[in-house]
Length: 250
Image 1 (cartoon, helix red, strand yellow):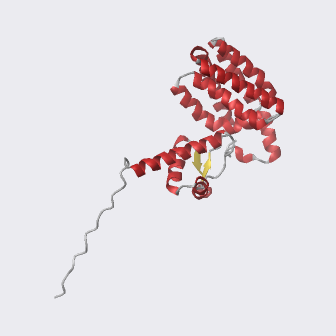
Image 2: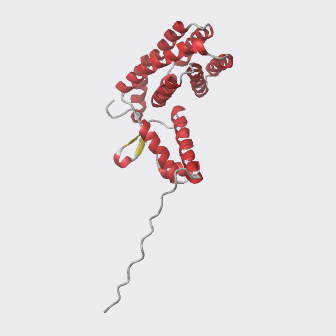
């Protein structure tokens, strides 16, 4: 009678402890990559419709694909990245209608931030706000659209930070990430930089005067005026053939 030998019991592989140093480092890496991608979206370096390839990103950042995958999952959860079938994961696009709606919400949120900033701004933030405005003026004088956009972001960031309202800051950043590529393109339209500088000057003065009501009204009007540039922007998109900026439902 043949001897039956029992198979060696399988040893279950334990998943890495999420509290281990290695896991913590990986989570930190994925968080850092997610923030870097968000910053690239905010600065217009990664545009709506851009394909987010794991391999390319892991090579660019010099990390394994695991933290990159986790970073992309974070972007997907926040709505900044969407799956497009065989095309893979892409930076989310807005339809024209959604862009207009988003900007109307941003106008109200930033108006609230300006109102609270006028009452809560710290001395060092007053200096930062002046510096950001002066940087916008200098960029306009030089005709440097990229420098103007960066200074414009800094100006709005200081206003939001000066509100000292964390919930409001989170909501504004979430929407800003979705609208930033479009706001950047609208900012580059003829005459927009010239119009923005005096608008910033009025907002700056209202905040420095601790006039919350006026700061709110001026900021709301400042953001709302962006929607007036959308029609011209759409004509530019049609002429350039760069329709990838908008979702197919646009």
